[in-house]
Length: 420
Image (cartoon, rainbow, N blue to C red):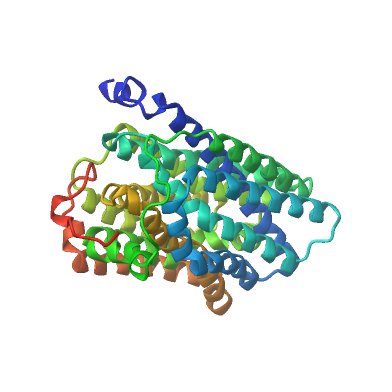
C-alpha cells in the first residue's frame, strides 16, 4: 500500500502538469508510430513478398539518424526542446497525411513508402534526443527513475493498443490507419507545445569540434553507460525477431494483418506490465545483475519464438521478451540521464538514440538480410543465440556494470571531467 502512495500520492510525477502533458503526448506519438509500423510492414510485404524489402524499411529509418547524430545533439542542447519535439511531430503528421492520401488514390509504391519512412526517420532523429533530454527537466532528480519508468509505460501502453488497432483498421484500407496516425501526431504536437520545463536549456556555449564530439567522449568516459548502451545495441541488433513479424504472421503462423497487430502488441503487454511494476518498485539493488539476467531472458525468448508454430504460444513468448527488454531500457535510460549534466543531455541523448536506432532500425535491416540468406526461422534462432553470447561477453568486459547496485543517482566513482 505504501508503494502505491509513493507513486500516485504527494510524490507522484503526475502532479507536475507539464510531465502529465508530456506523458500524454508520448502516448499519442507512440500510438501513431506503432500503428504506422504495422501498416507500412504489411503494405510493403504485400507489395513485394520480400523479407529484404522489410529490412529496407529499417535501413531507410536508420540512415537519417546516422547522418544527423552530431547535429541533432547540438540542436537539442542549444534550442527549446519542447519546440523541437512539437515541430518534429507536425512533420510526422504531414508525412502520414501524404501516405494516407496516396494509399487512398492507389498511387503508392514501395519507393514512395521508403521516402516517407526516411522523412519520419529524420524527424525522429531530432525528436528522440530532445524527448530523452527533456524528461529530467520536468521533475526533480530524485523522481527521474520514476519518471523514466512511467515514460516507458507510456511507450508500452501505446505499443499495446497501436499494433492491434493498426492491424484492425488496415482491413478497411491502408489509408485508414495512416489518416488516424496523422491526427494523433498532430495532437501530440499541440500537447508538446504546452509543456513548461522547470529548467531551460537555451543556447549554451560556442560550437567547436570538441563540443560536437563531447557526447561521445562523455559516454566513453563512463564505463557503466558505455556498457549498458552497447549491450542493448548488440543484443537488439542480433535478436530483432519483431522485425520479421510480417513474415511470421503471413507465412508461418498463417494469419492476416489483425494477427500481425496482435503479435506486435504482445511484447508491449509484457513491457507495460514490467514498466508499471518498476515505477512502483524502482530498482534499488543489484541493478546490473538484473539487467544481464533480463538480457539473457530476452535471448532465450527470441529462440523460443523462432521455434514456435502456435499463435497463442508465440504471443506468450513475445510477452516475456517485452518484459525482459524493458528492464534494460530503464537501467540504461536512468544511467544516461542521471550521470549527464543538463547542458550536455541533448548531445549524449543523440548518441544514445543512435545506439537505439542502430539496434532497432539497422537490426531490422540485418534481420531482413539474414532471413533472405538462411530463412526466417534459422535467422531468428541464431539471433537469440547471439544475444546470449553477447551478454556473457559483456559480463566479463564490464565488471563494474555487473556489480552496479542502484540507478537512483549518479555514481560517484564514475565522475569524469567532460568538455562542455
